[in-house]
Every structure is written in structure tokens, then in C-alpha cells.
Amino acid sequence: MTEAIRKNFASDNIAPVCPEVMKALENANHGSAAAYGEDQITSALSTLAEEVFEHKVWVFPVATGTAANSLALSAATDPFGAVVCDQSAHIANDEGGAPEFFMHGAKLVPLPSADGRMALSDLDRVLTSSSGHGVHTSPIQTLSLTQSTEWGTVYTLDQLGALTARARESDLATHLDGARLGNAIATLGCRPADVSWRAGFDMLSFGGTKNGAMAAEAVMIFREDLAKNFLRRVKRSGHLWSKQRYLSAQIQALLENDLWLRHAAHANVMAQRLAHGLRRHPAAALPFDVQGNEVFVVLPERGVESLEAQGYEFYRWTNPPGLEGILIRLVTCWATEAQDVDALLAAL
Image (cartoon, rainbow, N blue to C red):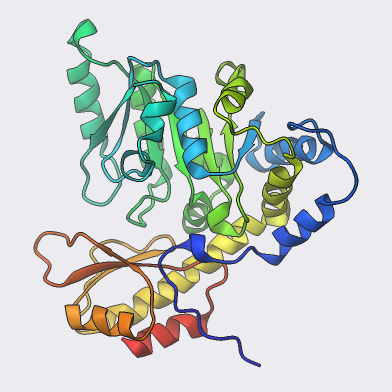
């Protein structure tokens, strides 16, 4: 029997756990194992991560992306310091103040952009202007970028390298929010190392939940000094799982045989299929390049309401200036099938 059409395009968080991760959890659920990350699965995960990223890496599994981002930023930023990010960044809009809380008061400095990608000129401007105010301003200590961005766009490797190089000139630590990193890698056709430490990043928030895991993210650190006391930060924040093997098993399953990249590539293909169909709609406008698994489209209100009346789920967003209609976000995932996309297009 044909599976029912999936009508929920609100997020990649709504997808079920992929079979490989569920199998890994089942395999981990036998016998006793050392607690608090001293188990064999966590040890094997660290070895596997170093193979995948081609570098020494300290891996700290956590359950949520909020914890991963906030803990990572706290390791590099003093309470009197600041983090510069794009104005669309998750840490600035969707973490409920957790980054500032975990950093004990450090501030975020969001920079405006047209499509979620920070411009080098804007970074240079804020670093130059903030350096002349001494103790009267919060020193910018960390650069945080998102790949792929909140608008579904992707930085090129050259763009990332230029931004991190400018950050290093000012002695900033560098953090990459990689909740959808796999989608960016699939678009760029590069290796995980190319978009992480080779691109100049000290820390990576590795996303698993959006890509097939049940609840698993990881902070991956490429600098020993930042990793030195990081486990104490995890413990102090209440994010150290006693049965950590179940977190580690999920990430291990995604990394093995490039499952996370295959999932991301499939989601991207479905997003391109959706975008292609939307571009053929005479009343639809796509304000951003579709480079990952997020499709933003402006539609007439009656079209949006029609989709909602037919049971489709998605988020409404603030409309870009100059475009009439309603901006909605449609997100594909590892479980999205061509029939799901085609049904939505037909409904529209």
C-alpha cells in the first residue's frame, strides 16, 4: 500500500527517526555500559569523527542544538565580551536567550544581511569600530556563522575563509552553527574538513536531529585549549547524560558510511524539485536562492490559505520589502518523497 502523502513542511524537525539511527539505538540497548561518556560507543564516535573530519577533534554529544551553540560560545567568550553573528542567526532569534545565559551576560552583535550571509565588509566595519572604545564597550571575542544559513543559502568556501581570516586578525575564536551542515556540504560538493577547520573554524555545532536522529547534536572542537574544560561546562549546565551511549550511538550511525550526507543530499534534491515547481507558478516569487533544504516562497494570501485548508503545515514569515503576498517556508528532509512534493504543487 502506498504511504500517505506527507503534508508537514514546517521543519526538518518533524521527520521520524531514520531506520539506521533506530537500529543503532537498539544495538546500544544491550548490557551495561560505563556512564557519562566513558562507554565504548562514545570512544568509537570520537575516532570516527576524526576520520570524517580529518583532524584531531574533541566531541561532546548533547541533546539539543540550543545547548550545543550556547555551550560552544561560552567556551570562547568572556561574560563581558561579545559574539558577532548574522541578524538571522538562530542564536540571535531562536534560542530564548540561552547563549547570553550560558555566557553569563556576554552580548550578541547581529549584523544585517540580505540573505543570511554576512558580508566581509560588514564584519570588518564592526571589528574596526569596536576596537577604539576600550573598556566602554564589550570586546568582540567570537565570530559565529551559520552554514547553511537561516534563509537556506550557502556560503562558498572562499567566503567562509575570508570571514574567519578577518576574525583571526582580531584574535577572535570562530564557531560554526552546523544544524544543516550536511545540506551545505551536499551543495558545495566538498569534504567535511573543507567547511569546518580548513575553513578556519575552531568549533562546530554538529546537527543530527534535523538529519535523522531522535535527539542528538554534538559540539566538535578543533582547538585543545577550548576543549580543555569543556566537559565541565557540559556537566555544570545539566547537559551531561549519564547514559551517553544513546546520544553517541545516534551520531555514530549518521557519520558511518556518510549517511548524514546522503540524507542531506536527498533533502536538497527534494527542495530543488519543489523550487522548480514553484517557479512555474505565475503568482509565486522565490526571494532567496534555494541551496539547501529550505524553500522560501511568497504567495498570494488565497494560495496560502488554500494550502492550509487542505492540511498542509508550514511557517509564515515576515514578507520581504517590495513583494506582495505572504512569505512561507517549506522544508524538505530525509523522509520527503517526490510524491509529497508533487502533491503540494498540485494542491497549490
